[in-house]
Length: 411
Image: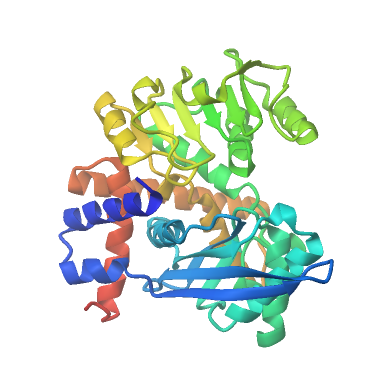
């Protein structure tokens, strides 16, 4: 089942639990606006190249739309629609005043020079500048984009609208980016895990973790978990996988991964087949890489008692059912990885106020939001007698539905 089908399915189950009227249910699913633009740029060799840029703006009942911009050769419209919709529910679960959006450009950033990427970003911004904005739609980095991309968007947008640092988040610190933004998703995963374990009278200390993915989210989660005395017994990334039953030395691994562009060849652990990472023996499994990795093929083999979804949509519905029967507790992506968008919100707030926060304040506020978010999800689980995924979806959908009705928008 693809990401869109799975997201729609979860939405429909949540709508049924909430007893939403069918007209309202339908209007909540339809995107507010879908934008598709042609971006033609001169390449460094003087030839012209055309790319397709797009933005799906899903819902703005609770505030400006928010979501990443990705540069990737295979940008699937269905997936972008699913991710835009997921952002609507995610911002509502996090209780931040945003709706959902997603977008990007169909290109391979590895094949373009820095100056070509800059020209492409600026042309894309020229095409959509009147459809995004501080109080309309606030983009952020995603796959294949980063702080530099946001800096170009900010500069190009400001030529039309005056200096507007709050038009994008995930910016370089020197242009109004927030301290703590880089670690935010991984730190949110830590706080979410702490809140869940707390329910079971456990703490991070002494638990055995397996992490799939060692990019921004996986590496920060690993670093923070090990600082809190959690034992990380296996880690994988695109280069390979390593295991050490006594616990991997994370500071050494971070150094190795930086020097060798991956975990492969790290001497503080034994190499294992990356395909087996999800079924390694552990207490807590953190998929922090791709979607759809936990499915009917491997769900029966999973030994973890808890799964924290740091990636988007790592568990497909069939995998979900098998794990539920086994009594595995899954903390869903829509809550578990919302630390990034929460700190993006803090960045936006700081830019609007023109007053920047200390990193300590950013982390303290993030902990408050993640802890309260978990309590809110648990309340919904009790009210509707459902698991954490449905608890989070009913919470998000209910907040958006209430805002829609209060604004007089229901069909």
